[in-house]
Image 1 (cartoon, rainbow, N blue to C red):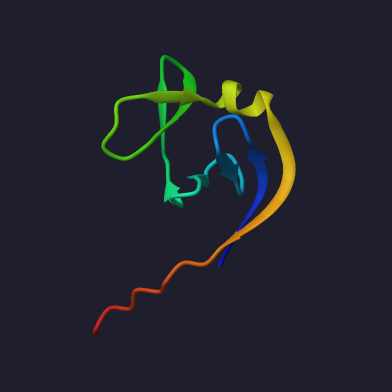
Image 2: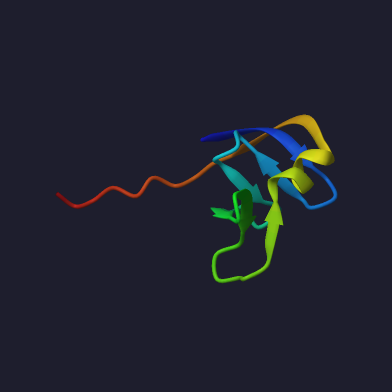
Length: 75
């Protein structure tokens, strides 16, 4: 269970903290990367980046809960 604390309605992105960011409604975890000294997020398999500053501008405090399946190894 992941609790997301912040929501950006313009980009449909929710934050648990600056490291854990999800694209909603698909519930896809976004990748973090640093480009030219700035923090960016992008979807896996995509080259389009969204900056942390841009996401932080329209952020609202809203609690969203995501349930993830547990993948256990066979050993």
